[in-house]
Image 1 (cartoon, rainbow, N blue to C red):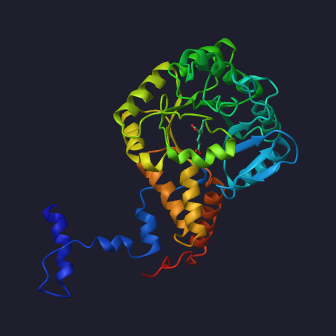
Image 2: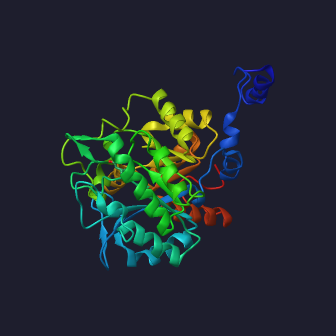
Image 3: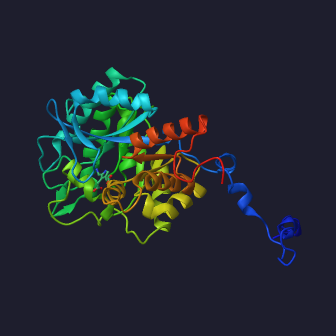
Length: 360
Ligand code: PBG
């Protein structure tokens, strides 16, 4: 601490000449207005990418048990959803497909009228301004639930690349703005880039799940997408949770192969990875606040053990503070709504939360 800083404390002694000098940092926390003035990180609706689970059929709107407030939707349900997102100021969605038919080779992943391809067209027809990112992976399309083609009981890396590339091209053909490979096969960004370019999609960016960990936090998603592996797990291709330096290698490789944006996933247990990625690479960095992170907040909120709204917002803020430029999150809609409520409350200088008044 410099002398100048310490000298600040002299008025601290005014009340009690016996006290040593100290600095009054509480000055900048005294009122909501001052806290707002000095806040370093704040959330906005623009920060969020909202995941959507698209099912086949008509009139489908099934709530996902372990993810309260999240639904499997058929394509006809999307326009209403898009209107709600637009109204809330959310400009990007991430699509996952739930095909009726699965097979060992994930054939439905890349058919022109597949569930995601159809959904992309519906969305683009209804709201051309909505940014559509598509998840590119085989796990929702294979009957064994693995992220690629099995050879001798293992996910075969090179045999899977063609499937991923075809899938990405079919998404871009349908009108997807960005493709997001989440499979963690080696070389898939290069394979997808080459295939997109060959198909004329030179301007379609790749948002690579570059540092994706083998995580227990994906549990609820596998219910939502029906993509749990029938045997084994994903540790042979997703990253070991003990490794952070390796994440930087993965990101460097994906950028080298042509990724335009990179994802760190999950978010909350990997804030250190987000921070290091932000410091190291000057590309758009996205964090995925995954299903298990969402489910835990919802469950604890339902039990009355935490204030879910405040925990969710604090979590999202921590992800942004760690360095993520954008956050894929199931909280997107409610968070945008809460931000709006908070802003309205500030505007009318009415306290929103207990203890958030303009007086200390
Ligand atoms: C794979 C994929 C997964 C998630 C996104 N893409 C599941 C997995 O790797 O097992 C998880 C997302 C979440 O948990 O919210 N297609």
